[in-house]
Image (cartoon, rainbow, N blue to C red; front, side, top):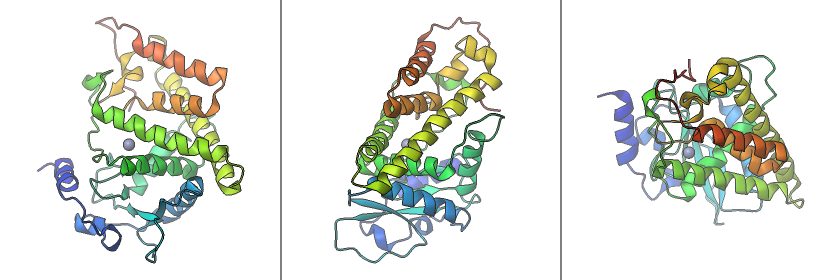
Length: 285
Ligand SMILES: [Zn+2]
């Protein structure tokens, strides 16, 4: 059986038991944990927890960090670092089914962040823990919404589309969940830690959005000018176009004429009719 299909089957069918805090979800699924990347995740979890602030419903904690049973209503969302031998790099961060936890493959996540922060000259600075903290808040959205896990990561350019799917809607809702938390923290001056984290994370998202545009123009200038489907549409049916998501996030947080213009221009390109014989340029190497 293909390893991706096997993982899908394991994560989809083997739901967690009710006693989430006392079990090791990675072990139960036969996945090996790694110690690599703990510092990044501890920093990111601390930032995400500051954004959660007075909301005492959830707190992120590494699976390696001991937690004492809490009498409050706080639920610990355990973050497991999964060894690259256990999971395909496609799954850099995800929420397994019915688990209320997050699986991260640190090396794949680091490579992903490096691509969007240091892979070409003149990129703007992005602190990795700011981006990972935002991702954790997005994953918490999936937990809160009881979404099934994210498994469809089609990379086939033939699957380029603008279709509305349930999975894409779930992703948009998880993005909005994280953005609502960031917006709340950025206007709450009573929680200075949360306010400072929110400013830092908003800057990181704005810079990431700029970097994505820079990569698109450097790698696919012709495709950008022609509004090629390969760059502007969605690759697969599980996630909306990543650059569009970041432009939307930046616009929601920044609310400037410039941020809105960037978002609107991208959407206009997506909607532009495509000639049938238009040469498409893949956006990934
Ligand atoms: Zn998601």
